[in-house]
Length: 426
Image (spheres, rainbow, N blue to C red):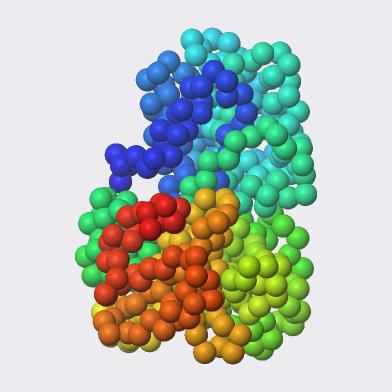
């Protein structure tokens, strides 16, 4: 997998190599999607181009020893607070400044997990502003497993000082190229490259379940949300990430969701926590499409996992068992299509669902961007009616429609294009 380069590698190199680029680059995305690999691959190419580089991870307790390694990345959470401190950051930055003056093209400093340092963004602002004033040829790349607004929290100190490089879950073409996954395997196992169990030996399959539920979900809750934002009800947050993947592909009233939660909470708190789960790349909350956006925000939400492994790993089903349960497999397929639409959309593109006022007709997904409107219906088996698309087309005559699955666009073809490419294609 290390030899496979995602498109983000070349984009990062272009940003750093550009003579006009003098901002911090923030590589942001969910956990375990290859952000560190992208940084290390880009570092290797940049060194070949004449840059000097250093990669540092702040969850490495060796950083505060006198003999710092050039590249450090181990995990010892018990000592993180002791070693990840502002002085460490300042010392590393000062060394990088000196290195930049000796480099023919400048120095690139990669900072991973810097957000665990208290008030990290304020320190980086001061250090970066001094670099610009004094003309140090220093490029800084920050990596973080959360949305940028979550990383900087309430601080606006880095506003206008960074470019964001978003890295989302792996797509079917990527998983197929590296691991040989079929569309059906991709829809069940999802797009976490390090979790792919390969041959379906029970021990490796059990490891896959453990990896998804603990290494990914557990770390997201404990390190990327609770530690970065003010969460008054962490138990409620954990219940949401436990419950909502089970209802991926379903429309649910907030009152019903509240009834499933053991910890007390209100609809406003639940909405905020769901937004944080979306920022962390776990669950998307979709609302009913209406020409008047604010009216749609008052509708019942539809949940969609942003990686189907989040719903299949804790389900208890094997790959074959999931395919044998038609209702469950239908939701897995629909969730995989919804995840692809959400993960590959541009910033201005919105994903919704549609249901008429009396609830008689429904469309799985609606993609909207400016004057463009696209209704998407997902079919997991043949001879399924598509009356919802007909009703949607009657309501919005200018809209385009498409069927994904049997009697429509094949899954491998659908997953090969981004959301906005589909808008332009149809």
